[in-house]
Image (tube, rainbow, N blue to C red):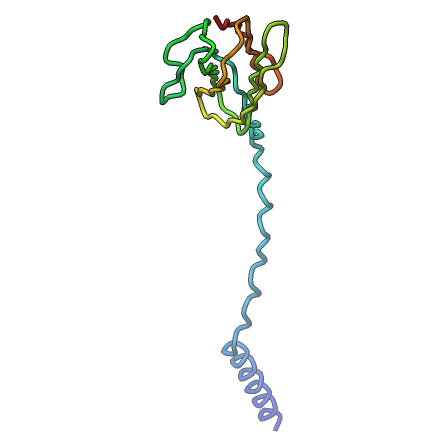
Length: 161
């Protein structure tokens, strides 16, 4: 009977080993993935501020008539009493807003007229001012002073004969 017990134990042991060898294999745990470190931010040069907007004075012409382009047709500095007197102010540059003022005076500084125009040029521009007096200008010396954004840029004397 001992042989049967040893044989039974050997069979049980063989079956256990066979079952263990044939049994379902345990799956290996998935590999641990470590995320790559975030790349360092790339430094870029700061965006430069936009160029300052500026309108600069380019010329002043007086006359008694203007063309479709707002330029004086015939420059002059002597006018007759019944003339309408034009001042064509030429500028260059660009700005969202610039104020041009023309101040007209007679004799020793008596104010004849002062007017302002807001412009928004994107390049060369002509801005025209004028004075008129239906009953005629007094004979004498006059002057027109022009400012752009409060800065004096031109002064032109003229005469009514």
